[in-house]
Image (cartoon, rainbow, N blue to C red):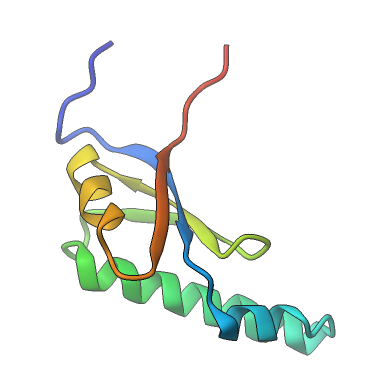
Length: 97
């Protein structure tokens, strides 16, 4: 089935090296893990809000282990995020048969 430009799919967005992320990730205490979760969630939300129209996407999760997140967006929105500051790679989630 051919996808349309307005159809949303799940994409994974991975960020460039971030020294603050690396510093926070080193703190393995319960509080440290919570602070890291908040930092990444806010960072990822700000990236989306800065680059995409409100309500045009749905972030499904932040991925703490890799400084990335999953988001339901269109192909055009994925193209916009690929050129956003701080983004390393944007990959469409592909079903494996």
